[in-house]
Length: 204
Figure 1: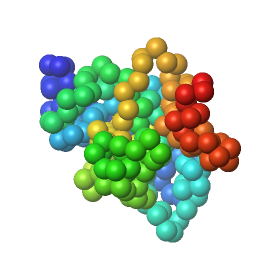
Figure 2 (figure 1 turned 180 degrees about the vertical axis):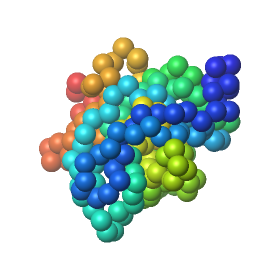
Figure 3 (figure 1 turned 90 degrees about the horizontal axis):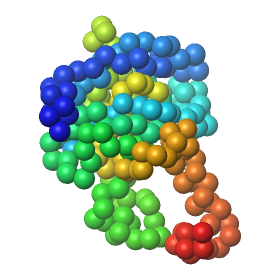
Figure 4 (figure 1 turned 120 degrees about the vertical axis):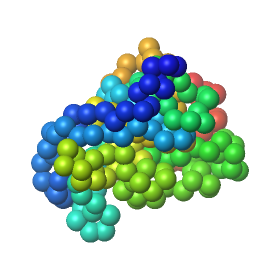
């Protein structure tokens, strides 16, 4: 844990794919990733997949067209440092980042039939959960987040409510898909088939 606390005091340089303007090619840049604040993690990204939602919002000028921005919301990585107030996840853990939050307390999070947290609703915010950014370029300009995750970066910062710890033996190229593609498609198939999530899991 000493490594995490040491790194907590520092900003990191990170190689990132930055969208400078809507619909224009991403630019590989060296940016600055600030240390995590309370209940946040800084994650070294292992793999991040491309989802069509990234493409959709990358094309948008208005509304929700915040630039410069780092996309990517199907992401898996290793926790590099942690902020205050985090007990369930430690430095070195492998985690999946998710655009949906999990507070673990509200009726929806404690239900087996829903994954839409009613306490921390999903919004198309250009920031992390506290309403600020952890990214900036080398000139000091703010770079915006996407989907609370921003995985097209060597390092990213996410709120603890947006990560799930996974087995590090799971291949990163597959684990990242659990952040959106697999989970949303699986749920859609269950809805179309008229079965509950728990029934489908028990049958596997």
